[in-house]
Image 1: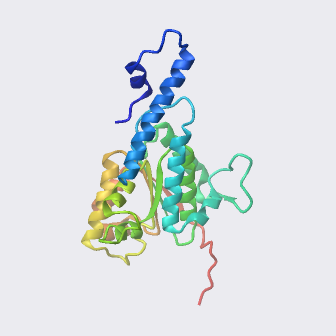
Image 2 (image 1 turned 30 degrees about the horizontal axis):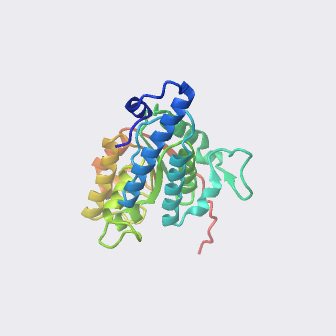
Image 3 (image 1 turned 30 degrees about the vertical axis):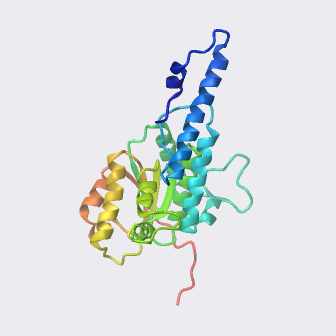
Length: 270
């Protein structure tokens, strides 16, 4: 179990000669040692490191590094690292060469506000739904949202709906992962970005897909964990594929953003 600074400080009285600043520094160092040890043990078991409620007065670089690596790994599995060039707002010093800011049609202000509220623990809309036509910039916006969330101290993962249900099949998970780990990685992270919801199902889904999707969303809803969904479909279309219950539960506390921009890829038509 991860100990808080206060709990560790109470276990051992500081020497009489130790000033308050030194005592606090020692308590923080000891707490981080416990967290590091616990996280390493959980990584060895293939589990997600515990996300305790400890709040530090200074940035926890170790924890931030874990979040960054988890985020990048999820994008690597989706083969979407190229989308990291998109940003909700300008990074310090401005975007690097080749990087771009979201435009107004991708709702950067609404996305930034939602993440800010989440990080502060004040957001009343638990979920975010980005819907619109193919090529309208939803995935770029959601990944920019995820990068901002990680920078704000939220453990975030990205996965396409089709990949998630495929990884739950026997021997379907990525190398080094089990189906149990796939479920744990995605139903326990601080923010899940579930993209292309029902995007590869041609208007229908098997009972196994409905069950797996329902279990994932229900677990997150029950524990109060936010989910950002990207889809080309409207709610009534998703209801026909996954069932009305999932749509109802997801939409009960969600902010919906429409992406109406024409296909940005400008594909050749034939």
